[in-house]
Image (cartoon, rainbow, N blue to C red; front, side, top):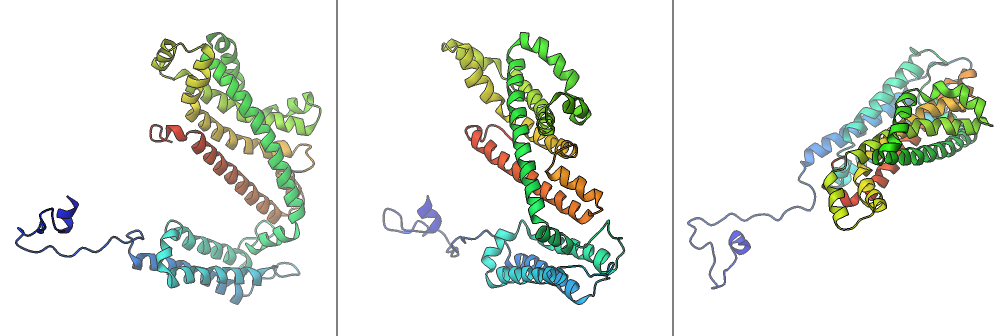
Length: 353
């Protein structure tokens, strides 16, 4: 079939396309790069490079509105950094267009980001439309990260440690409770009403009780984070175990499987997709309670840092901490995605997520 398609000689030594009245046009070999129009890739890359260059020119050439007794620090460095990004994009897209396809997905963001930063720069440092100290230009964030990195880094470490402890305990307890409710009717009879009654209550509402019953503020914060994580994990695990096809159990029992085998090798693997959904929901809930828990008696953490910055009207420090918190949450979610893909690799193609 392939020799007929390409017009190669057949087994008898004659061309298989000899009977054709018109010879076939020569076909070009497939390209190794994706079939993307070079002009389109160049336009996006050029537009992004121009946008970053415009941000650099705006930052360096337009004088700042002096706030108080001093100008905004790191303005020149911010402008040079924006110009370097523009030159890098121009080099990647212009000198080696074949590699530009790797940047194609991020192309719109590479254009939108400097436009947003430029608007932010104009409204704060250039025209002072947004008043200080509530608003500050983007280079002020660099000042916080450079000058206050020690306190911010220590707070990030304490928050990550507290989050790992609370999420781990909550996920483990929620998973065991969910499996027990989904598998045993007796356990479900007693535990299910408790979960339905206590689960919808926000964990932050139990803050006074947690600080009263637990010996330290750290232990109370761990309990609140574990409670916020455990409820969605328990509910989704219970739902996953309860919705397993009964035919799987019948086949396993026919082959002589024990009750523990049915739980560990049938029920839990089949419920894992919903378990990971519960973990994602619990991780999001844990971040919301993390800030509240760390504002009450904890001596370090991002929540404590936010409260400290707000008390001193250092709103730039507060924005810098919020960005760090968003990056921490995004990193943990990405890590959880990688763990899920690894754990559910045997279900790839049969389960959609």
